[in-house]
Length: 137
Image (cartoon, rainbow, N blue to C red; front, side, top):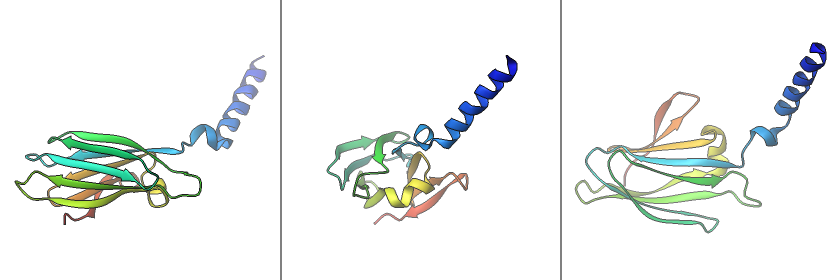
């Protein structure tokens, strides 16, 4: 009986590992954090596939999360976001925070972005750190 249970478990494990649809998602979570300690950031994001997230106001230390599609039939989903701080420092810019062909491997299942005083950073899981990506305009 033990032999049968062990073989059944082994077959199930092989099936799970060999079946990418069980461990792979067609979506990625995109997260933008306001890591500027003294200023709000206005965020407005739109995709090339017609999705519009409207405008969000991120206070210091807060974040905003949405979902991007990795496999859009016939398209490469792109999220363009306009970021603008309140007039105190005048930080602003338009940043491509998700391109499915660029980010589906470097982000994993989550693209973690951080808005800081010197620019926009992305967490790279393979390097275990945030890396500078974009300078404010």
